[in-house]
Image (cartoon, rainbow, N blue to C red; front, side, top):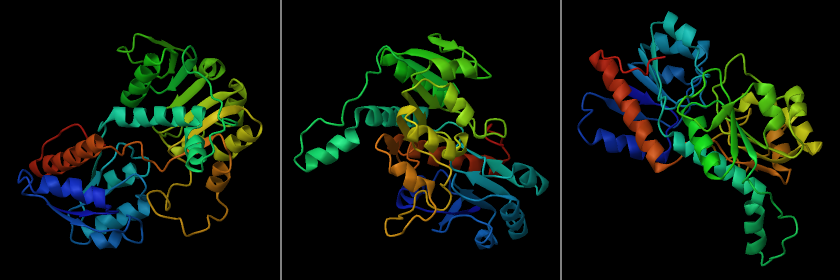
Length: 329
């Protein structure tokens, strides 16, 4: 099988080439290119049996149909999320879509807690002050997490890992999930409204669906405690950004930590330092002193990248061998 690997970064190539060189996947040949997969670049896949794409790429109907014309039979998503893929059209076109459902839940959960601690203890600001020989503590007062209530929205693998971390901090854990995780005997499951009202920390760990699109909006923000901490490491569109900004301005939040946001497409993983972000809500978010933003790096650990490359390659091999491994969408 020949695979066209879109949106190649140096770290992608390093981990995938390492597996290629083992000889285990000798029937698989990867061509790495820098452009992201979009309707405009899909034609580059002409002659390839498979493409490998990531969460920031456009696999809408137009892209999928172009891939079909190119002869593509398999779309390999090297990520867990697939809300950017038109699965219905892919099925219609006879294209199999496979993902990496569980690469390293702890990587994302640990980053979520990193955002929490950075935001509530202002360590990003303290670092900058100390670099300028300013050791004054003004503006750096934080809050304890111990004894507070953590509300985990979505208690799958990542949410469960975050719940365990919060539990280790001595927090009371409440959760909201349509399918409660029975292994989390320390989690008290409640309805969404109760979680909004009682949680001091709200951490989002659920996939993006039509039902939960903009689940954090002006109405749900109003139900939250004053001084709440909000963290999102799942999907940007779970939060209606304009309403979040209004809430921050109204001093509803003690701190906000975002690893994902609605404007990711076209900017995430790219160096935009020499450009002006016109009409950007990101520029407004970055203007607030209690908002901590990172560039969708929750997955970005050595262990996670190893797992992603191994599972993606196994997905390709399973397709070649006609073997079902449970990662088909």
